[in-house]
Image (cartoon, rainbow, N blue to C red):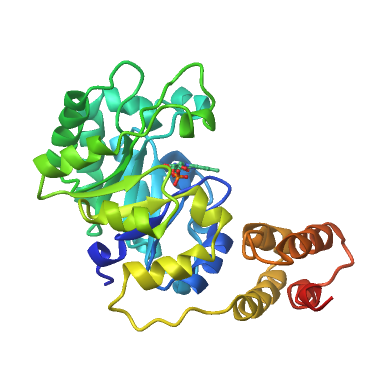
Length: 326
Ligand SMILES: Cc1cc2nc3c(=O)[nH]c(=O)nc-3n(C[C@H](O)[C@H](O)[C@H](O)COP(=O)(O)O)c2cc1C
């Protein structure tokens, strides 16, 4: 059993369409210890759909947390059980997503106004599984944006057995802003998460939102238990090597070089191809590997063209190295 309190010092956020199993496999090559989250999977999709396909992941991805969406305690309990059986290390409940589609299903951020229902969901899942149940939330929604509102939410949900809260430190506006704007427009108020930690010292509090440097991570870790990184980790994946070194200094870690990562991913791509996975599904997550490096744009352009070419063959990652020689 991995020590999640250790791993959650740094985590990569759940991101729909982004943090799928291919992305996680890639990120794991860069950092052995960062805690990885899946994309959100709805409890209904797991219970009524193809759970084996939705939950598929490789042992190399550990430690990995499954994020669920939903608001029906029984359905969530069943989905959490499936996640535990599949080998996930943690189940995380999404109480932060503001998208209209999620709102229409009455889950995500809108559930912040019904802490008792969230507590019921957490309680049902906690009874169903032995792995930790955690919650990812915002600091508020719409006009419910006071510290007391957040405090009440955390207190009620913690009572039901949630010991870890990931707090995206901006509120969500449920009408008028797109999901993308909801990740940019409402101001970040990290102080709110710090205050929650001061008041609930027995809870692990992980901060999320707008963090993009190891210095910032270090600063937050002085006050909180963990830092979750979303967009920066996706767009600048190699940053995770620097982060691994600084955030887990007690580990014996030598940062890989990018060429080694490419060669590993080449092997992975062959295995995926055998299962009928198109190169694009894997390579699209790697486009930031050379971000900011000389020749990085050329490399990216080369691969973007290759993945569109049906005759390109599966050795495109190895061939991409030649871009740097020219
Ligand atoms: C493309 C994309 C998809 C996302 N999907 C999810 C999701 O499925 N579940 C969730 O809780 N948050 C989701 N988020 C929000 C992130 O987890 C995170 O809270 C947000 O991006 C702020 O962190 P950052 O500033 O480090 O990116 C998504 C964000 C992005 C950019």
